[in-house]
Length: 187
View (cartoon, rainbow, N blue to C red):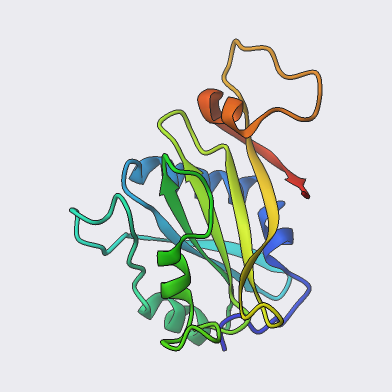
């Protein structure tokens, strides 16, 4: 079943892998200004990314995504656990939108469509992908809630790195072009 945790891998642990994050960032940048989509999967303790085409009509793909559901079935058939569905938002930030909620919940909007599967939203910008946010179903709230905010990039070459660990998201959005090992920022 998608999302059933079969090993120690979690979405947050998988996203701590710089190479995996670099693939997600490159995919989001390749699709920009259209939304990208992918799956974050695990086979035991090993995580991987299944990069996907956005099947939304081109006229809509700048503001939505359509992931081929057969990818979830294929991952499960291969013995992989689907940790998260990943997609980007272009030029608006990595937030949980009403459209995201509609796509991720049952028609009555009272349960997740894929129990145990997280959602990762990437903040895609012309200058890069400065952050991602992880959303997980909250049973008490009966809605998806943000559980992590991830800093995905460092300043462009030639610009001084910040001396303090905190740099505003707005500043990263303007100067981000290079993925690095991410920093988990808890709010």
